Length: 224
Image (cartoon, rainbow, N blue to C red):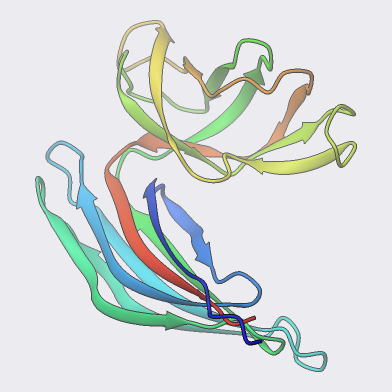
């Protein structure tokens, strides 16, 4: 007896951090339809830009890894207190033995600062970030962090490994800063507890004030 396809609606809601991030990849055995996607400017007197890309990656044996990027919109500026509807219809994403489709978003904004050091307490969730130049944040500011490389201790199911955090992307609240606003190089935030798994900062990363948020509605249709 044939089994009817399984339909599932999902919503993805994430901050748009500076740089490129993959927000959705069609799972194995599923064809997906992006029904709606919009990005809101949640900053103050800011004019960030956003690029949304449909990425098709080959999974065929002879062409594995070959990638084609088609931009749905490129470097669209979003004024203060406004939002941009990028998809208001249907964008089909496929997944088969030959191809894998993903949605990629890339944000460009002001206020980006490089991270020079980071300490994470896996028991309390407190992360202390030191920046190479003054970060400009105040207590209770919403910020994003991206591209921080950590090694995860032996308590991790995969053993000792290096991972990029945060994944998936999320926003954080500044709990405290060291020194005056405008000259401070250090702030703390609670990034969540991972009990029993120590994390050691390796290198890289950047922080920025939260300026954009993405919301995307998707219909997944099982093809198996």
